[in-house]
Amino acid sequence: MALELVHNQSQPFAKVRGEPLHELPADLYIPPDALEVFLDTFEGPLDLLLYLIRKANIDVLDIPMARLTEQYLQYVEVMRRKNLELAAEYLVMAAMLMEIKSRLLLPRPKAADDDELDPRAELVRRLLEYEQMKAAAQKLDRLPQRDRDFLSVEVWIEQSLVERLPNVHVQDIENAWRSLLARARLSRHHKVTRDELSVREHMAGILRLLAGGAFREFGELFDPLRGVAVLVVNFLAVLELAREGLIEVTQSEPYAPIYVRIGVAAADAQGTP
Amino acid sequence: MLSLPEAKMVLETALLSSQEPLAIGELRKLFDQELGADTIRRLLDELREDWTEKGVELVNLASGWRFQTRPAFQPYLERISADKAPRYSRAVLETLAIVAYRQPVTRGDIEDIRGVTVSPNIIRALEARGWIDVVGHRDAPGRPALYATTKRFLDDLGLRSLQELPPLEEIAKSLDLPAPSGEVAAAEPDGASGDDERTSPAIASAA
Image (cartoon, rainbow over all chains, first blue to last red; front, top):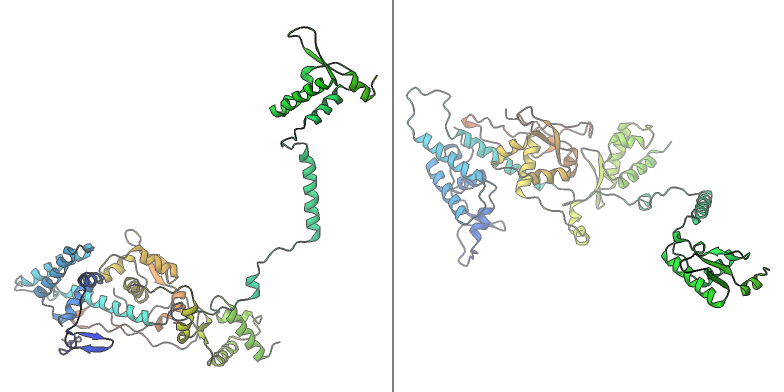
């Protein structure tokens, strides 16, 4: 069988800045959590297996299952002890490896079928396919990437700066104003606002009401619908008018209706007889 | 009727100010279809030539033609740019590679090859970048979604078609492995750039 993957025995075990290293430097410092950091970098069981295979220069087409399984289990155990998040797939792979190992140990039946596959075949296929994709991923990443290695050019156009606003004619503004005025007039009568509460104003109002000299019942001077505040001011106005003698407040007997009439002085001022 | 040099200037202006690559079909509209596709291509080649000594280059991508900054200047631009493009993790890149070379694939297919579950974040990240999308569903239990790469993926990596993807490394052919070998057909000259929807890589897919 053609052995495509041959590894150089005298390969340096590491490369620092492109320079190969054949032995550990004496002053090399390994931080305590280096192992965790290292174990964490594996993308999964296939990744770990590939690492073990390549590191030990194992011939992937004739994997020594017992040795590989043992090494794999050791690493998984370290990961577990270091409380690294162990994907379930690692354990599934452990089981798979042990199964393959045991199948290799079983004696082959005498009349072996031709399509009795090497129990390692599927594993090898998966390993090689993953390795192929891993290499492809690295190559893809080395292609120039937009936003990382270059930018697409887009010249800023005046058009894109100014917001496209709809055209407005003077006539539109005039019409808008007219309708505003019309609405304001309509709503003035229905406006619900706080009235300017002026006692003097209410006094004048009451006098106007009483102009002509007729007697008015006390209640007629008040509009309860306009609220308490207005009632109070109205009452104050009545009191003030009474004090100034501008109105006459009379009652025939206790609990009888109270009547109000314009006073003599005010009548004179108004010109009523 | 515009002179050719004038037409070239129109092309230049349109390409510089466009937000997206412009295909020949689009560019023809600039002239009310009065110029043929061949003429436009010739002018574009000239235009590309004109810009060789500039920091910006005219490139022909899967979706059409576009002006891009030259990678040599990226280090300078990074000094004044606020945001830095994120580097993708190995998981994302491996997933992307599998979709690119084996499309269309389901998440399950990706997981089989990688040997680990694919986090939905990875798929989402690639979809958000606009590099992969769902092109259909496999007729299998669960009707899983099939993913493929997009034209934008090709544009962003400066490729005109999937044929231009870096060739896969060869896998050992012994042991009767059903795994595909990695030769990709050589890139074809720009005959119908941007016109094909999706060209599969010239790799025989595994059954």
